[in-house]
Length: 152
Image (cartoon, rainbow, N blue to C red; front, side):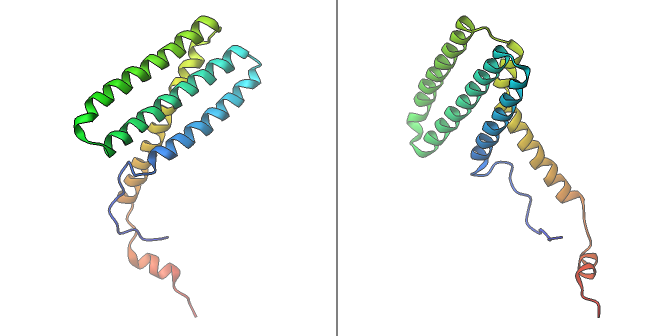
């Protein structure tokens, strides 16, 4: 059992968005593949559209944040406003088009739209739980040394 004397790590590190994106894509693919077992085109397309929009929103938001961090503060407010307006206009158009031209299952689309949020909650919750366990469970150093000592 390794001993960790460092302070608990922060909730968000530099690789957090990449891990959220990869987990969201994998979980979306698994759920979409599972929806194929119901043999319902409406269910599967609703889930797929919701997952795609959720991942697109996350990726666009993260790209906007990275751009804002790299550039001057004067440009950030206008840039955020332009990107947010454009992002929600495009996503709204996609949702409207999907609802008008396809038969949509609202519950399945809601599940797909909440995919990234669910992954973020799972990742933050698991990190908080691990940090709590690391702080609350104390193992005396003597017990660790005695369990790894070689007896002759």
